[in-house]
Image (cartoon, rainbow, N blue to C red; front, side, top):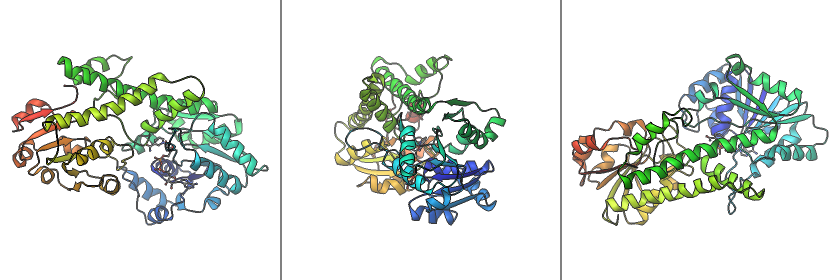
Length: 434
Ligand code: NAD
């Protein structure tokens, strides 16, 4: 199959690279010339483990290329995927569909033969029909069908998630388009990964419902964690005890500083707005959003308490600022709420993150970036574990404590246990929900 991938970000690039690895001919399009130039030089513009090797072998095999020329990529394509951003629209919490609709218009003008226009971006229910209407209006002669194919990959494990998905969801209404989608995903059918064929609206809804459910699990355990602290329970044991129940499952039950990232915050917000618009408020999702904001503020209070009520003049070493490990993505990371509160409170904040600097240097003004965890902690009053990168999971705690002015640890990811932290020379340890 010939595939054009419009939008070469976290999802578009991974999807394009993986489709080419399936054996398809893929052209990845982006409107940012510097991104395309980087890709043409063989450089991956994002940090995603394993992506560079798969990209390199498919470029070498002649199956994968990059361009800013959308029309050239769409010409002759069997499928045109839209994988552009759908951020939260300023002011009202809705998904901003500007990029999707602009891409649809460009695609309309570029369509030559029959193609399936597939929306991979996360979009509100009804968007695929709008995409269809936009293309139809711009190019009444165009031969095409639309399909909804939401993406479920996780940054940091994106290649594996794409190649070995829990499921593929395809919303499609014509047999011809279904056949094209079947050919594209054939390597996954052959390995018996489940494919859910459904209508457009259900496919769009599945993506929002999935993310809202996962966000609910996180907010649920975070709220339980706050109660655990009051009643003397340990949320890690509680999560284990409930997670072993097959109906609940043990994933997404790690208490922490609240969810962030490029998906949960914007998708829960969009779902809440969709519900309000249709007169069916999604009260659980609305509460999940409120709880998540409260959790981030609770983390700030925790740090203030540890510093005796004020962080003014304190030196705080923050380990990890990306929204999770194994990604450089900072979008809506809890660090973007917590770190500015510390800086605003007069703290001297040192940040250490293996991949956070590129985005973080503009998003977190007023902090000092330090490459090494031990250097960041030298003479610090408190060390805060904010993102559980592997290198922060196995720190030499005695060495860390030995260099600090006041060895105090706030472990907002529950990476360590209190006894070993205290045994290593720390005078105080706080986790979340313990
Ligand atoms: P991103 O911001 O990383 O990438 C979007 C890219 O699209 C950018 O490079 C931008 O320059 C490009 N673009 C925008 N308009 C364009 C146009 N008209 N023509 C060509 N290129 C254009 O976004 P992302 O994180 O890859 O997310 C894309 C979509 O996938 C979103 O709807 C998101 O919700 C969804 N999604 C993301 C993830 C994730 O983990 N990031 C997971 C599942 C689904």
